[in-house]
Amino acid sequence: MSDPAHPVKIRDFGLPGQQPGASGPIPEQLHGMISLGAHGNRIYFGYGTNKNGIMQIVDRDKLTHGPKEPSAENLLYPEVGRLVMTPFNGAHTAFPMPKMPIAEFAKDAVGADRDIVMIVDEQIRNECEEPRQMAWFVDVTIEAHPMVISNFQVPEASGDFCFARRPLRHPRFERKHGADFL
View 1 (tube, rainbow, N blue to C red):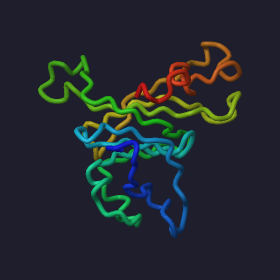
View 2 (view 1 turned 45 degrees about the horizontal axis):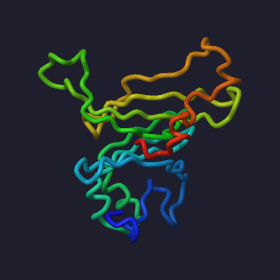
View 3 (view 1 turned 90 degrees about the horizontal axis):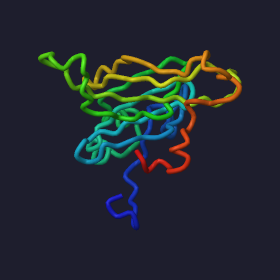
């Protein structure tokens, strides 16, 4: 997209099992990805909107300049990290928050700043007809070993959780302003 008036296809990309001619189980669909741009050299992919979630961290340069044929080996080539979630939870959005200062670790010799990814699932079925979807906070400072460090959910005690609201589904700000705020 260096010239939005003249987009150029770079390559087909996904998880192994999604490429043409693959056999066996097909991984959940890609919902979206967020890039840190050329300077940040990372793209965060979220697969599985509300189940079988996978958060994948990809080297942007290897993705754009690596082998183009969508073989299983070539699809894994740019991957630097992956978190496989439980079958109950998806990875609708993987939102990177690099270099987050952690107040509790401020005086530590190493690790006062952490690279965090917030993974948000999407509740699709109404009235609690599927597992509870939440927001997950993942420490990706060591990219090869992403680790869930916290989660957030709207408590049932807040009232009418199952009938009146879908709290983790497209906030009002996103609907009004689109994805441009990312």
